[in-house]
Length: 240
Image (tube, rainbow, N blue to C red; front, side, top):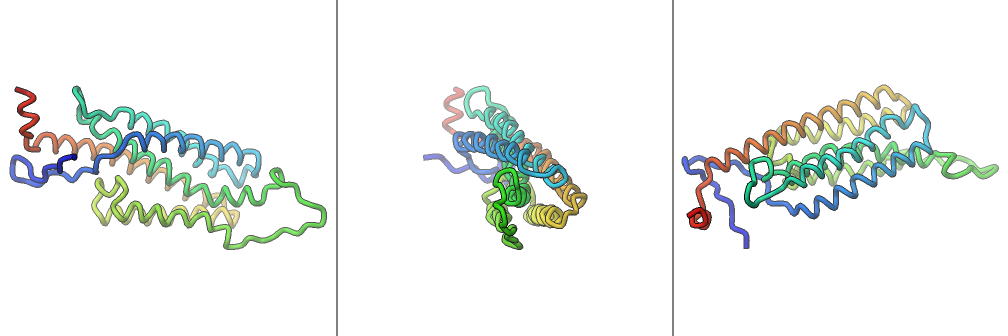
């Protein structure tokens, strides 16, 4: 059985609350899924849409695919054995942060527009003679409902960002994610591709900033924990 982490440092002050230990194998499998799935969807959309309508959508999908490769690099550095340093002890957490914010968020932002493009594509399904277009209307926004469980994942304490940002800041970031995704989706449906691109670009910049800050903060927290954590008796005996 794994032992509980110390909560009070050698100086009597509370230690940083680090994320729980993650199973790197599970996240490594997710890296493969997040690499192939958005990449395949981007290639499919290239054959099915119009340039003015799918540009930002393909960019978001390719970002999600490329971010998975970077996340795999972070996860591959995870180590708890001999020679492990501050960076290698939070490799999985950092990789999870990349997957959550630069993998999942762009994919969620691209899915509603992706569905619209594929549903209205005349290349994927030929139109039968005399057939009438069926207006899907607001139902086209159903794929965007996937944002809600993602927000629950973030705000209920499952996400890595929960351990990096104060609660109010975490709520603000997730509300901004929701607003920007909805803004990009609505802009795309109204044909205002300038608004769609601005919301999508702002979303990516926000996520990139959160990832940068989050990885640096995780390293600082781990370094502080290692410096002030009480030495375990088993570790002390091993050093002797």
